Length: 242
Image (tube, rainbow, N blue to C red; front, side, top):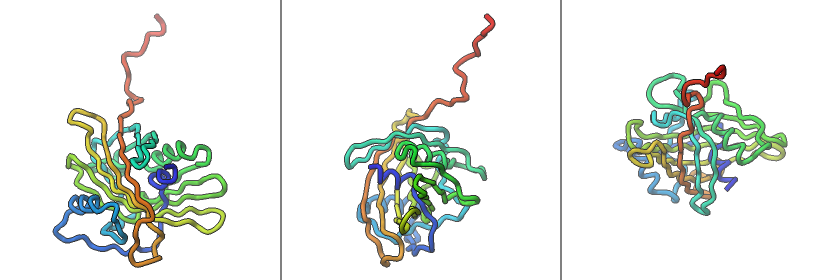
């Protein structure tokens, strides 16, 4: 479980061009994402996941805004992990919010790695690339190399990201590609909680073959529960002079 969650949250990327096939012209992103989910675990690369530009982040619906307690359950063994996640207004404004990738990586990294995680840094001018510095002179580099997402106004929000992971350290770098397709919606009509499912596959490094089959696959269930706003007042300040 530790290995898969580390791959899921603190992925590393940044690599050469990837061959991407085109989706049928009549399909929108929502159609492609639904078909991709149904094809799991028989995924293959290359896939129709366009590479985002340096400044293009994954946009989430406005109902993601805030800080959340996230419980992630590995459906293969029912093991779970609890961490925090934060979503904030995008720097360029406009609709939707973005994940605070540094905050979120630190949060889950502390749970999984403890003191082994030293820092998490955002690459200057590149929202899709982070670097985690680990003990033992190791560095975990994460870059998003493919992405699709559905309409922000839909009741069900879907996204699919392909990342390249490179673990630098003593010896040769370890490289892999991770694809994670997520499906989010309100847990029920009146709930502020968000329920999600995630389908994931780990692929070998690029360049080994024209087509790649998964090395391993995983599936998860997530629940996001809003944390209280620390700036909100519970009532008028106490009169300490009384």
